[in-house]
Length: 570
Image (cartoon, rainbow, N blue to C red; front, top):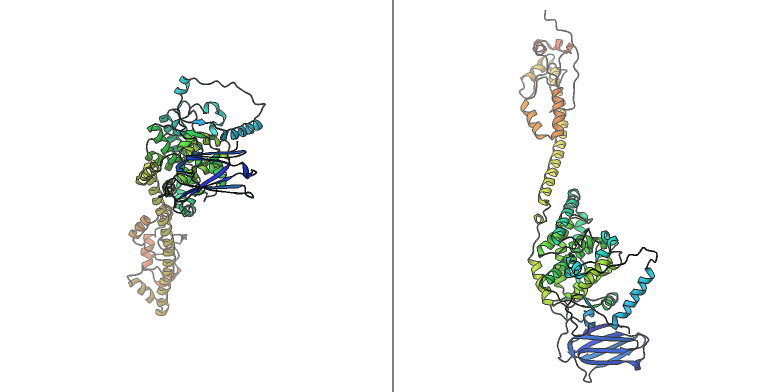
Protein backbone atom coordinates (compact mmCIF):
# COMPACT_ATOMS: atom_id res chain seq x y z
CA UNK A 1 0.00 0.00 0.00
CA UNK A 2 1.05 3.57 -0.71
CA UNK A 3 0.57 6.40 1.76
CA UNK A 4 -0.83 9.26 -0.33
CA UNK A 5 0.16 12.91 -0.08
CA UNK A 6 -2.34 14.72 2.11
CA UNK A 7 -2.96 18.02 3.84
CA UNK A 8 -5.22 19.05 6.72
CA UNK A 9 -6.89 22.36 7.51
CA UNK A 10 -9.86 23.48 9.56
CA UNK A 11 -12.45 26.13 10.15
CA UNK A 12 -14.51 26.60 13.34
CA UNK A 13 -17.07 23.92 12.38
CA UNK A 14 -15.34 21.33 10.24
CA UNK A 15 -12.12 19.54 9.36
CA UNK A 16 -10.93 19.67 5.74
CA UNK A 17 -8.80 16.82 4.37
CA UNK A 18 -7.22 16.97 0.91
CA UNK A 19 -5.73 13.72 -0.41
CA UNK A 20 -3.85 13.38 -3.69
CA UNK A 21 -4.74 10.03 -5.25
CA UNK A 22 -4.04 10.10 -9.00
CA UNK A 23 -4.96 7.21 -11.30
CA UNK A 24 -7.80 5.90 -9.14
CA UNK A 25 -11.47 5.32 -9.82
CA UNK A 26 -14.20 7.30 -8.10
CA UNK A 27 -16.15 4.11 -7.43
CA UNK A 28 -13.36 2.56 -5.36
CA UNK A 29 -13.23 5.02 -2.44
CA UNK A 30 -13.71 3.72 1.12
CA UNK A 31 -13.97 6.07 4.10
CA UNK A 32 -14.21 5.26 7.82
CA UNK A 33 -14.79 7.89 10.52
CA UNK A 34 -14.95 7.18 14.24
CA UNK A 35 -14.14 9.90 16.76
CA UNK A 36 -10.41 10.61 16.38
CA UNK A 37 -9.86 7.81 13.84
CA UNK A 38 -10.08 8.44 10.12
CA UNK A 39 -9.30 5.80 7.51
CA UNK A 40 -9.27 6.29 3.76
CA UNK A 41 -8.77 3.62 1.11
CA UNK A 42 -8.59 3.92 -2.69
CA UNK A 43 -6.50 1.20 -4.30
CA UNK A 44 -3.46 1.33 -4.18
CA UNK A 45 -3.60 4.13 -1.56
CA UNK A 46 -4.30 3.73 2.13
CA UNK A 47 -4.33 6.50 4.75
CA UNK A 48 -4.92 6.11 8.50
CA UNK A 49 -4.91 9.21 10.72
CA UNK A 50 -5.19 9.73 14.47
CA UNK A 51 -6.69 13.19 14.82
CA UNK A 52 -6.14 15.59 17.75
CA UNK A 53 -9.93 16.11 18.06
CA UNK A 54 -13.15 14.23 17.47
CA UNK A 55 -15.17 14.34 14.26
CA UNK A 56 -18.58 12.88 13.48
CA UNK A 57 -20.28 11.23 10.52
CA UNK A 58 -23.84 12.61 10.67
CA UNK A 59 -24.72 13.33 7.07
CA UNK A 60 -23.21 16.80 6.94
CA UNK A 61 -19.88 15.56 5.57
CA UNK A 62 -19.05 16.42 1.98
CA UNK A 63 -16.64 14.89 -0.51
CA UNK A 64 -15.58 15.71 -4.04
CA UNK A 65 -12.99 14.38 -6.44
CA UNK A 66 -11.14 16.37 -9.12
CA UNK A 67 -10.29 13.81 -11.80
CA UNK A 68 -7.88 16.08 -13.67
CA UNK A 69 -5.82 16.84 -10.56
CA UNK A 70 -6.40 13.50 -8.87
CA UNK A 71 -7.39 15.40 -5.71
CA UNK A 72 -9.93 14.06 -3.22
CA UNK A 73 -11.35 16.69 -0.83
CA UNK A 74 -13.29 15.71 2.28
CA UNK A 75 -15.12 18.03 4.69
CA UNK A 76 -16.12 16.43 8.01
CA UNK A 77 -17.95 18.28 10.84
CA UNK A 78 -16.36 18.53 14.27
CA UNK A 79 -18.12 16.92 17.19
CA UNK A 80 -17.75 20.17 19.16
CA UNK A 81 -18.28 23.21 16.99
CA UNK A 82 -15.67 25.92 17.49
CA UNK A 83 -13.05 23.51 18.88
CA UNK A 84 -9.50 24.10 17.64
CA UNK A 85 -7.54 21.01 16.57
CA UNK A 86 -3.91 21.56 17.52
CA UNK A 87 -1.03 20.14 15.50
CA UNK A 88 -2.66 19.50 12.14
CA UNK A 89 0.66 20.35 10.48
CA UNK A 90 2.47 17.63 12.44
CA UNK A 91 1.89 15.03 9.76
CA UNK A 92 4.24 12.40 11.17
CA UNK A 93 2.44 12.24 14.52
CA UNK A 94 -0.95 12.08 12.79
CA UNK A 95 0.15 8.97 10.91
CA UNK A 96 1.07 7.18 14.16
CA UNK A 97 -1.43 4.50 15.26
CA UNK A 98 -3.47 5.42 18.32
CA UNK A 99 -1.99 4.47 21.69
CA UNK A 100 1.37 3.19 20.44
CA UNK A 101 3.79 3.41 23.32
CA UNK A 102 6.98 1.52 24.16
CA UNK A 103 9.07 0.99 27.27
CA UNK A 104 12.25 1.54 25.27
CA UNK A 105 13.07 4.83 23.52
CA UNK A 106 13.57 5.07 19.79
CA UNK A 107 11.40 2.05 18.95
CA UNK A 108 10.24 2.19 15.36
CA UNK A 109 6.63 1.21 14.63
CA UNK A 110 6.90 -0.77 11.42
CA UNK A 111 3.78 -0.44 9.33
CA UNK A 112 2.70 -0.99 5.79
CA UNK A 113 2.90 2.73 5.28
CA UNK A 114 6.67 2.82 5.73
CA UNK A 115 7.55 -0.68 4.44
CA UNK A 116 7.46 0.56 0.87
CA UNK A 117 9.99 3.27 1.65
CA UNK A 118 12.19 0.74 3.44
CA UNK A 119 12.23 -1.49 0.36
CA UNK A 120 13.16 1.47 -1.82
CA UNK A 121 16.03 2.34 0.52
CA UNK A 122 17.29 -1.24 0.38
CA UNK A 123 17.28 -1.14 -3.41
CA UNK A 124 19.27 2.11 -3.39
CA UNK A 125 21.78 0.62 -0.96
CA UNK A 126 22.21 -2.42 -3.19
CA UNK A 127 22.84 -0.25 -6.24
CA UNK A 128 25.52 1.80 -4.48
CA UNK A 129 27.20 -1.10 -2.68
CA UNK A 130 30.81 -1.79 -3.62
CA UNK A 131 31.04 -5.56 -3.98
CA UNK A 132 34.86 -5.51 -4.01
CA UNK A 133 35.28 -3.85 -0.64
CA UNK A 134 37.05 -5.83 2.05
CA UNK A 135 34.51 -7.15 4.53
CA UNK A 136 34.71 -7.93 8.21
CA UNK A 137 32.19 -9.91 10.16
CA UNK A 138 30.34 -7.56 12.51
CA UNK A 139 30.16 -8.77 16.09
CA UNK A 140 27.12 -7.75 18.07
CA UNK A 141 28.07 -6.10 21.35
CA UNK A 142 26.82 -7.62 24.56
CA UNK A 143 24.64 -5.75 27.03
CA UNK A 144 27.60 -5.27 29.36
CA UNK A 145 29.75 -3.87 26.54
CA UNK A 146 27.00 -1.50 25.41
CA UNK A 147 26.47 -0.22 28.94
CA UNK A 148 30.18 0.54 29.25
CA UNK A 149 30.11 2.74 26.13
CA UNK A 150 29.45 6.46 26.40
CA UNK A 151 26.06 7.82 25.38
CA UNK A 152 25.37 10.43 22.71
CA UNK A 153 22.78 11.24 20.06
CA UNK A 154 19.28 12.57 20.63
CA UNK A 155 18.66 12.84 24.39
CA UNK A 156 21.80 10.73 24.97
CA UNK A 157 20.01 7.60 23.79
CA UNK A 158 22.62 6.15 21.40
CA UNK A 159 25.90 4.30 21.78
CA UNK A 160 28.10 2.06 19.68
CA UNK A 161 27.29 3.84 16.41
CA UNK A 162 30.79 5.12 15.67
CA UNK A 163 32.35 1.77 16.49
CA UNK A 164 31.21 0.67 13.01
CA UNK A 165 32.00 3.98 11.28
CA UNK A 166 35.66 4.67 12.01
CA UNK A 167 36.50 5.92 8.50
CA UNK A 168 33.73 8.54 8.49
CA UNK A 169 34.33 9.59 12.08
CA UNK A 170 36.82 12.42 11.45
CA UNK A 171 34.66 13.91 8.70
CA UNK A 172 31.58 14.17 10.91
CA UNK A 173 32.77 15.09 14.41
CA UNK A 174 35.92 16.49 16.01
CA UNK A 175 35.94 13.97 18.85
CA UNK A 176 38.43 11.18 18.27
CA UNK A 177 37.05 8.43 20.51
CA UNK A 178 33.36 9.05 21.25
CA UNK A 179 32.75 5.56 22.58
CA UNK A 180 35.39 5.81 25.29
CA UNK A 181 35.38 9.53 26.15
CA UNK A 182 33.30 10.74 29.07
CA UNK A 183 31.23 13.90 28.99
CA UNK A 184 33.78 15.75 31.14
CA UNK A 185 36.64 14.67 28.87
CA UNK A 186 34.71 15.78 25.79
CA UNK A 187 34.17 19.21 27.27
CA UNK A 188 37.79 19.63 28.28
CA UNK A 189 38.96 18.60 24.81
CA UNK A 190 36.47 20.98 23.19
CA UNK A 191 37.62 23.95 25.28
CA UNK A 192 41.27 23.24 24.49
CA UNK A 193 40.53 22.97 20.76
CA UNK A 194 38.63 26.28 20.81
CA UNK A 195 41.43 28.06 22.69
CA UNK A 196 43.92 26.79 20.12
CA UNK A 197 41.74 27.80 17.18
CA UNK A 198 41.00 31.34 18.40
CA UNK A 199 42.81 33.94 16.27
CA UNK A 200 43.12 37.45 17.79
CA UNK A 201 44.08 38.90 14.39
CA UNK A 202 40.97 37.49 12.70
CA UNK A 203 38.75 38.69 15.52
CA UNK A 204 40.18 42.23 15.50
CA UNK A 205 39.96 42.43 11.71
CA UNK A 206 36.24 41.67 11.84
CA UNK A 207 35.81 44.02 14.81
CA UNK A 208 37.31 47.14 13.20
CA UNK A 209 36.61 46.39 9.52
CA UNK A 210 32.93 45.65 10.02
CA UNK A 211 31.24 46.78 6.79
CA UNK A 212 30.39 43.21 5.83
CA UNK A 213 29.29 42.41 9.38
CA UNK A 214 26.90 45.37 9.44
CA UNK A 215 25.36 44.21 6.18
CA UNK A 216 24.70 40.75 7.62
CA UNK A 217 23.22 42.23 10.79
CA UNK A 218 20.65 44.12 8.70
CA UNK A 219 19.45 40.91 7.00
CA UNK A 220 15.96 39.70 7.95
CA UNK A 221 15.54 35.89 8.00
CA UNK A 222 12.28 34.29 6.92
CA UNK A 223 11.03 33.70 10.47
CA UNK A 224 11.02 37.45 11.19
CA UNK A 225 8.47 37.92 8.41
CA UNK A 226 5.88 35.43 9.66
CA UNK A 227 2.37 36.65 10.35
CA UNK A 228 0.40 35.68 13.44
CA UNK A 229 -1.51 32.43 13.10
CA UNK A 230 -5.30 32.75 13.02
CA UNK A 231 -5.68 29.13 14.11
CA UNK A 232 -3.18 28.75 16.96
CA UNK A 233 -3.01 31.52 19.53
CA UNK A 234 0.51 32.74 20.25
CA UNK A 235 2.07 31.03 17.24
CA UNK A 236 2.98 32.17 13.74
CA UNK A 237 1.46 30.99 10.49
CA UNK A 238 3.98 28.59 8.93
CA UNK A 239 3.47 26.84 5.61
CA UNK A 240 5.36 23.74 4.49
CA UNK A 241 6.45 23.04 0.94
CA UNK A 242 5.43 19.87 -0.85
CA UNK A 243 8.97 18.56 -0.42
CA UNK A 244 8.82 19.14 3.33
CA UNK A 245 5.43 17.45 3.58
CA UNK A 246 6.79 14.49 1.67
CA UNK A 247 9.72 14.28 4.07
CA UNK A 248 7.37 14.33 7.05
CA UNK A 249 5.45 11.40 5.59
CA UNK A 250 8.72 9.46 5.15
CA UNK A 251 9.78 9.78 8.78
CA UNK A 252 9.34 6.58 10.77
CA UNK A 253 6.87 6.46 13.63
CA UNK A 254 8.80 6.50 16.89
CA UNK A 255 7.80 6.91 20.50
CA UNK A 256 10.04 8.49 23.11
CA UNK A 257 9.87 7.77 26.82
CA UNK A 258 12.44 10.12 28.30
CA UNK A 259 13.28 10.64 31.94
CA UNK A 260 13.82 14.15 33.31
CA UNK A 261 17.60 14.37 32.61
CA UNK A 262 17.06 13.09 29.06
CA UNK A 263 14.31 15.63 28.41
CA UNK A 264 16.59 18.41 29.65
CA UNK A 265 19.36 17.20 27.32
CA UNK A 266 16.91 17.16 24.41
CA UNK A 267 15.78 20.75 24.98
CA UNK A 268 19.30 22.13 25.47
CA UNK A 269 20.55 20.27 22.41
CA UNK A 270 17.67 21.73 20.38
CA UNK A 271 18.64 25.29 21.38
CA UNK A 272 22.28 24.61 20.47
CA UNK A 273 21.36 23.28 17.01
CA UNK A 274 18.94 26.16 16.32
CA UNK A 275 21.63 28.70 17.29
CA UNK A 276 24.02 27.21 14.73
CA UNK A 277 21.26 27.16 12.11
CA UNK A 278 20.31 30.80 12.82
CA UNK A 279 23.93 31.93 12.35
CA UNK A 280 24.24 29.97 9.11
CA UNK A 281 21.07 31.50 7.64
CA UNK A 282 22.20 35.02 8.50
CA UNK A 283 25.79 34.55 7.31
CA UNK A 284 24.59 33.26 3.93
CA UNK A 285 21.61 35.65 3.82
CA UNK A 286 19.21 32.74 3.50
CA UNK A 287 21.00 31.06 0.58
CA UNK A 288 22.47 27.74 1.68
CA UNK A 289 25.75 26.77 -0.01
CA UNK A 290 28.31 23.98 0.03
CA UNK A 291 29.71 25.30 3.32
CA UNK A 292 26.35 25.20 5.11
CA UNK A 293 26.67 21.62 6.46
CA UNK A 294 30.12 22.41 7.82
CA UNK A 295 28.98 25.69 9.41
CA UNK A 296 25.97 24.19 11.20
CA UNK A 297 27.95 21.19 12.38
CA UNK A 298 31.00 23.18 13.46
CA UNK A 299 29.14 25.83 15.46
CA UNK A 300 27.06 23.30 17.38
CA UNK A 301 28.92 21.62 20.22
CA UNK A 302 26.13 19.04 20.27
CA UNK A 303 26.76 17.95 16.68
CA UNK A 304 30.54 18.46 16.52
CA UNK A 305 31.63 17.24 19.96
CA UNK A 306 28.56 15.20 21.05
CA UNK A 307 28.43 17.68 23.93
CA UNK A 308 25.90 17.32 26.73
CA UNK A 309 24.97 20.55 28.50
CA UNK A 310 23.60 21.01 31.99
CA UNK A 311 22.31 24.58 31.66
CA UNK A 312 21.21 27.09 29.07
CA UNK A 313 24.11 29.38 29.98
CA UNK A 314 26.58 26.65 29.01
CA UNK A 315 24.89 26.37 25.62
CA UNK A 316 25.20 30.11 24.97
CA UNK A 317 28.85 30.24 26.07
CA UNK A 318 29.78 27.25 23.91
CA UNK A 319 28.05 28.73 20.87
CA UNK A 320 29.64 32.16 21.42
CA UNK A 321 33.15 30.71 21.66
CA UNK A 322 32.71 28.64 18.52
CA UNK A 323 31.41 31.60 16.49
CA UNK A 324 34.55 33.56 17.41
CA UNK A 325 36.88 30.65 16.59
CA UNK A 326 35.77 28.92 13.39
CA UNK A 327 33.52 30.54 10.74
CA UNK A 328 34.36 33.24 8.20
CA UNK A 329 32.64 36.05 10.11
CA UNK A 330 33.74 36.24 13.76
CA UNK A 331 31.94 39.05 15.50
CA UNK A 332 30.22 39.13 18.89
CA UNK A 333 27.24 41.00 17.46
CA UNK A 334 26.54 37.97 15.25
CA UNK A 335 26.41 35.85 18.42
CA UNK A 336 23.80 38.08 20.05
CA UNK A 337 21.89 38.29 16.77
CA UNK A 338 21.73 34.48 16.52
CA UNK A 339 20.41 34.31 20.10
CA UNK A 340 17.63 36.76 19.23
CA UNK A 341 16.82 34.79 16.08
CA UNK A 342 16.58 31.53 18.02
CA UNK A 343 14.30 33.17 20.56
CA UNK A 344 12.06 34.34 17.72
CA UNK A 345 11.96 30.83 16.23
CA UNK A 346 10.91 29.32 19.54
CA UNK A 347 8.32 32.07 20.08
CA UNK A 348 6.79 31.29 16.69
CA UNK A 349 5.78 27.82 17.86
CA UNK A 350 6.35 24.16 17.08
CA UNK A 351 5.59 24.52 13.37
CA UNK A 352 8.37 27.08 12.95
CA UNK A 353 10.81 24.89 14.89
CA UNK A 354 9.84 21.91 12.75
CA UNK A 355 10.41 23.85 9.54
CA UNK A 356 13.91 24.85 10.71
CA UNK A 357 14.72 21.24 11.57
CA UNK A 358 13.48 20.11 8.17
CA UNK A 359 15.82 22.60 6.50
CA UNK A 360 18.74 21.29 8.55
CA UNK A 361 17.72 17.74 7.64
CA UNK A 362 17.77 18.65 3.96
CA UNK A 363 21.18 20.35 4.21
CA UNK A 364 22.69 17.30 5.91
CA UNK A 365 20.85 14.87 3.64
CA UNK A 366 22.57 16.36 0.61
CA UNK A 367 26.05 16.14 2.12
CA UNK A 368 28.20 13.06 2.56
CA UNK A 369 28.82 12.03 5.33
CA UNK A 370 26.90 14.71 7.30
CA UNK A 371 23.73 12.67 6.71
CA UNK A 372 24.85 10.55 9.69
CA UNK A 373 23.94 13.48 11.94
CA UNK A 374 20.37 13.16 10.70
CA UNK A 375 20.29 9.59 11.97
CA UNK A 376 21.83 10.58 15.31
CA UNK A 377 19.94 13.81 16.01
CA UNK A 378 17.85 15.68 13.43
CA UNK A 379 15.35 12.97 12.40
CA UNK A 380 14.51 12.23 16.03
CA UNK A 381 14.13 15.94 16.75
CA UNK A 382 11.73 16.29 13.79
CA UNK A 383 9.55 13.49 15.19
CA UNK A 384 9.83 14.47 18.85
CA UNK A 385 9.02 18.18 18.44
CA UNK A 386 5.67 17.34 16.86
CA UNK A 387 4.50 15.65 20.04
CA UNK A 388 5.77 17.97 22.77
CA UNK A 389 3.38 20.33 24.46
CA UNK A 390 3.38 23.96 23.40
CA UNK A 391 3.63 25.14 27.00
CA UNK A 392 7.04 23.47 27.24
CA UNK A 393 8.25 25.58 24.32
CA UNK A 394 6.82 28.69 25.96
CA UNK A 395 8.69 27.94 29.18
CA UNK A 396 11.95 27.52 27.22
CA UNK A 397 11.39 30.88 25.52
CA UNK A 398 10.93 32.57 28.87
CA UNK A 399 14.19 31.09 30.17
CA UNK A 400 16.10 32.09 27.03
CA UNK A 401 14.84 35.66 27.22
CA UNK A 402 16.16 36.00 30.76
CA UNK A 403 19.59 34.63 29.88
CA UNK A 404 22.43 37.02 29.06
CA UNK A 405 25.82 36.54 27.45
CA UNK A 406 28.75 38.94 27.89
CA UNK A 407 32.15 38.91 26.25
CA UNK A 408 33.89 38.05 29.49
CA UNK A 409 31.73 34.91 29.78
CA UNK A 410 33.53 33.43 26.77
CA UNK A 411 36.88 33.43 28.62
CA UNK A 412 38.83 34.55 25.54
CA UNK A 413 40.07 37.87 27.07
CA UNK A 414 38.16 39.83 24.45
CA UNK A 415 37.88 43.05 26.50
CA UNK A 416 41.62 43.17 27.15
CA UNK A 417 42.35 42.44 23.50
CA UNK A 418 40.03 45.19 22.27
CA UNK A 419 41.39 47.76 24.74
CA UNK A 420 44.97 47.03 23.71
CA UNK A 421 44.04 47.31 20.03
CA UNK A 422 42.29 50.64 20.58
CA UNK A 423 45.31 52.03 22.46
CA UNK A 424 47.60 51.09 19.59
CA UNK A 425 45.24 52.71 17.09
CA UNK A 426 45.07 55.91 19.13
CA UNK A 427 48.86 56.06 19.40
CA UNK A 428 49.23 55.56 15.67
CA UNK A 429 46.68 58.27 14.94
CA UNK A 430 48.37 60.65 17.39
CA UNK A 431 51.79 59.93 15.92
CA UNK A 432 50.49 60.49 12.41
CA UNK A 433 48.87 63.75 13.46
CA UNK A 434 52.03 64.90 15.29
CA UNK A 435 54.27 64.16 12.33
CA UNK A 436 51.91 66.04 10.04
CA UNK A 437 51.83 69.05 12.36
CA UNK A 438 55.63 68.94 12.74
CA UNK A 439 56.14 69.00 9.00
CA UNK A 440 53.81 71.94 8.55
CA UNK A 441 55.44 73.80 11.47
CA UNK A 442 58.93 73.23 10.07
CA UNK A 443 57.87 74.48 6.66
CA UNK A 444 56.21 77.62 8.02
CA UNK A 445 59.07 78.40 10.42
CA UNK A 446 61.62 78.03 7.61
CA UNK A 447 59.68 80.55 5.58
CA UNK A 448 59.53 82.89 8.59
CA UNK A 449 63.28 82.57 9.07
CA UNK A 450 63.95 83.54 5.49
CA UNK A 451 61.58 86.47 5.79
CA UNK A 452 63.26 87.66 8.99
CA UNK A 453 66.66 87.55 7.32
CA UNK A 454 65.37 89.64 4.47
CA UNK A 455 63.86 92.09 6.95
CA UNK A 456 67.25 92.55 8.67
CA UNK A 457 69.19 93.06 5.44
CA UNK A 458 66.93 95.75 4.00
CA UNK A 459 67.66 98.44 6.68
CA UNK A 460 71.37 97.73 6.30
CA UNK A 461 71.28 98.61 2.64
CA UNK A 462 69.30 101.73 3.32
CA UNK A 463 71.46 102.80 6.29
CA UNK A 464 74.67 102.56 4.32
CA UNK A 465 76.92 100.82 6.75
CA UNK A 466 76.26 99.13 10.10
CA UNK A 467 72.88 100.75 10.75
CA UNK A 468 71.04 97.60 9.73
CA UNK A 469 73.23 95.50 11.98
CA UNK A 470 72.47 97.70 14.96
CA UNK A 471 68.73 97.41 14.31
CA UNK A 472 68.80 93.60 14.32
CA UNK A 473 71.17 93.50 17.29
CA UNK A 474 68.87 95.72 19.42
CA UNK A 475 65.73 93.73 18.54
CA UNK A 476 64.77 91.35 21.37
CA UNK A 477 62.84 89.10 18.94
CA UNK A 478 65.78 87.99 16.80
CA UNK A 479 69.27 86.64 17.50
CA UNK A 480 72.20 88.67 16.32
CA UNK A 481 73.60 87.67 12.93
CA UNK A 482 77.33 87.71 12.29
CA UNK A 483 76.88 89.74 9.15
CA UNK A 484 74.22 91.17 6.96
CA UNK A 485 74.83 88.44 4.39
CA UNK A 486 74.09 85.57 6.83
CA UNK A 487 70.40 85.35 7.88
CA UNK A 488 70.92 82.05 9.80
CA UNK A 489 71.11 82.82 13.56
CA UNK A 490 74.33 81.85 15.18
CA UNK A 491 73.10 81.52 18.78
CA UNK A 492 71.20 78.41 19.98
CA UNK A 493 67.50 78.43 20.52
CA UNK A 494 66.56 77.73 24.11
CA UNK A 495 66.93 74.06 25.00
CA UNK A 496 63.43 73.83 26.56
CA UNK A 497 61.85 73.91 23.10
CA UNK A 498 63.91 70.94 21.94
CA UNK A 499 63.03 68.99 25.07
CA UNK A 500 59.35 69.72 24.67
CA UNK A 501 59.50 68.70 21.06
CA UNK A 502 61.22 65.41 21.88
CA UNK A 503 58.49 64.54 24.34
CA UNK A 504 55.77 65.22 21.79
CA UNK A 505 57.39 63.29 18.95
CA UNK A 506 56.92 59.52 18.51
CA UNK A 507 59.89 57.18 18.74
CA UNK A 508 60.82 57.44 15.07
CA UNK A 509 60.76 61.23 15.08
CA UNK A 510 62.66 61.41 18.37
CA UNK A 511 65.42 59.22 16.97
CA UNK A 512 65.73 61.40 13.87
CA UNK A 513 65.92 64.59 15.96
CA UNK A 514 68.46 63.07 18.31
CA UNK A 515 70.69 62.12 15.41
CA UNK A 516 70.40 65.62 13.97
CA UNK A 517 71.27 67.25 17.32
CA UNK A 518 74.33 65.06 17.66
CA UNK A 519 75.46 66.33 14.27
CA UNK A 520 75.00 69.92 15.36
CA UNK A 521 78.27 71.88 15.24
CA UNK A 522 78.81 74.40 17.98
CA UNK A 523 80.26 77.80 17.07
CA UNK A 524 83.90 78.54 18.03
CA UNK A 525 83.81 80.89 21.08
CA UNK A 526 86.94 82.65 19.99
CA UNK A 527 85.61 83.18 16.52
CA UNK A 528 82.31 84.39 17.97
CA UNK A 529 84.11 86.95 20.21
CA UNK A 530 86.24 88.07 17.34
CA UNK A 531 83.31 88.39 14.95
CA UNK A 532 81.46 90.70 17.31
CA UNK A 533 84.44 93.12 17.25
CA UNK A 534 84.94 93.08 13.54
CA UNK A 535 83.58 95.75 11.31
CA UNK A 536 80.86 94.98 8.80
CA UNK A 537 83.26 95.09 5.92
CA UNK A 538 85.72 92.67 7.59
CA UNK A 539 82.86 90.37 8.59
CA UNK A 540 81.70 90.15 4.97
CA UNK A 541 85.12 88.82 3.96
CA UNK A 542 85.17 86.25 6.81
CA UNK A 543 83.77 82.82 5.98
CA UNK A 544 85.20 80.79 8.89
CA UNK A 545 82.25 81.05 11.29
CA UNK A 546 80.75 77.62 11.93
CA UNK A 547 76.96 77.72 11.67
CA UNK A 548 74.61 75.67 13.79
CA UNK A 549 71.46 74.23 12.18
CA UNK A 550 68.55 73.95 14.57
CA UNK A 551 66.17 70.97 14.10
CA UNK A 552 63.22 73.02 15.26
CA UNK A 553 63.78 75.44 12.36
CA UNK A 554 64.67 72.88 9.75
CA UNK A 555 65.53 69.35 10.92
CA UNK A 556 66.83 68.36 7.50
CA UNK A 557 69.27 71.29 7.16
CA UNK A 558 72.92 70.39 7.72
CA UNK A 559 75.53 73.09 7.07
CA UNK A 560 79.00 71.89 6.20
CA UNK A 561 81.66 74.05 7.93
CA UNK A 562 84.44 75.59 5.85
CA UNK A 563 88.02 76.06 6.95
CA UNK A 564 88.99 79.77 7.46
CA UNK A 565 92.39 81.24 7.97
CA UNK A 566 93.24 82.36 11.47
CA UNK A 567 92.31 86.02 11.98
CA UNK A 568 95.16 88.51 12.14
CA UNK A 569 94.71 90.11 15.55
CA UNK A 570 97.84 92.18 15.21
